[in-house]
Length: 261
Ligand code: F6R
Image (cartoon, rainbow, N blue to C red; front, top):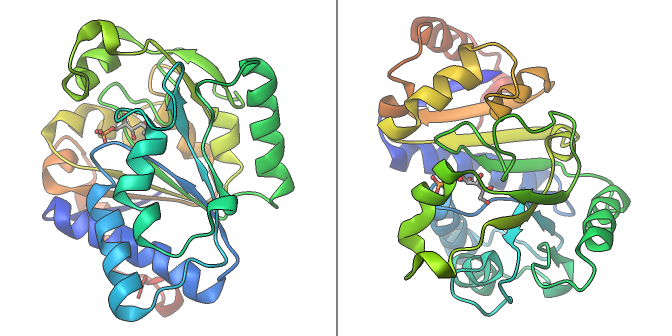
């Protein structure tokens, strides 16, 4: 894992956006895996700015989102369809036909999950997968103790995740317990994974992901098996890491072509 520590969440987002834009400029027909939640909001804002001010072109991009709530229609304000539309898609020139988000109201959810996994494969695979990190170590909605080799499927949210996300929902009854999510196996097949985490609430999960043992108790630790994962975290999220000096040393000694520019 490449671990990059930045002083603020803003700098984390700007670096994440830079990595996405670098891929887009070298490979305009790329396949992006996208995340929702609080963490990538500023990254999307920066990509929108780059689209407007620097002509960053999303016309050739295909995208696959990580997850969606079961039971929420695309126009539901708490659905990830709605989130993506409002926070990103409607502001850039991505082709709506090239956008994929799991359908939380699919009639046959199991068949839909299999078709979603197949569609990722048929697109040629994800070139860059953006990820956020749950405070319990989840990525996508792959909760602790789940399979580290799973594919897209329906999962039950843990009570911890429900508590973490409760503020997004006006009433507890309206908060779905089930999600469709890419599996850990799906995520590990992406060429490059970029995971961002900010704030002290994420510091335990960050420590377990990077320096802990590979374990389904921290699903994000499966990224230790991935050939190319970039972790971008702010100082608060990095606070519990024992090897911060080493990560800084590695960053200072990158070869020119390894530096994100
Ligand atoms: C969202 C997703 C989740 C979030 C994670 C962190 O698509 O897959 O894994 O990335 O729950 O959420 P925030 O960023 O809201 O702290």
